[in-house]
Length: 306
Image 1 (cartoon, rainbow, N blue to C red):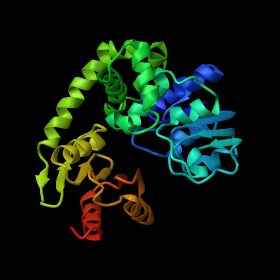
Image 2 (cartoon, one colour; image 1 turned 30 degrees about the horizontal axis):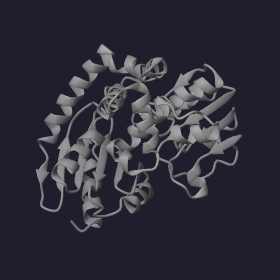
Image 3 (cartoon, rainbow, N blue to C red; image 1 turned 60 degrees about the vertical axis):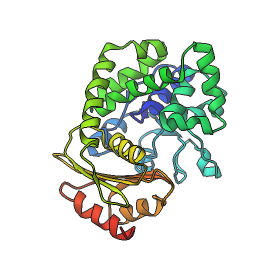
């Protein structure tokens, strides 16, 4: 079984792994869970071999009791000693831009459109600033597609997880294996994108300017808090703090667009409080119990002295 993240990098990483090792059962955790809940764990542990792509799953050690575990990732992580292989350049002190570039290196995979989409999925237009941009440029030339076309393909692939559609996320692995144009020409994904774009725009306009930062409390069933936070932060060029109240949980996001501060200590703070949290230097996201979002936002603002 291949367990992969639900975003473009996770989808294209699964596609690369299939090209290298052959077809296998695909599985993505419940969207929004950067871990396997009890139901998902029961499903995954029944496999004799589990390959984890583009996810730092805290339950990986438990899976070793049931299956051969292989991990290929690029996030901050601690080595899983029981894994048959845990290949993550971060464990050697190096950050890679995507899981697709990790697979490219580990398996001597050619730098094709799947690798490029993974890079753009995680780095966006900022990919121009990194060494791996040359991969994207070569793919643009080879496929005769513009950067905007490649970024559109990323948005279309990501639209499925934003719609909370796990089945479609997995279907997208097989879709992207057919080619970029098949993704770009998907009417279903375009309908997703149109709907999600309207939802993101609607909520982004409601953000409150609090001087040092932007603040928003929203209520949406869709996986759009990251996109909303990015839209607000980049659009207003100041930090954005967003809380989303869902029926079963609260979500929290903060993004620093101009390196005003680091989110790393906020991630550790959230984890110390028992919350599932992750991110990187400029962004932090956390999943909270229902009704805890506003209280947690206040704690974060207090730490930041805002």
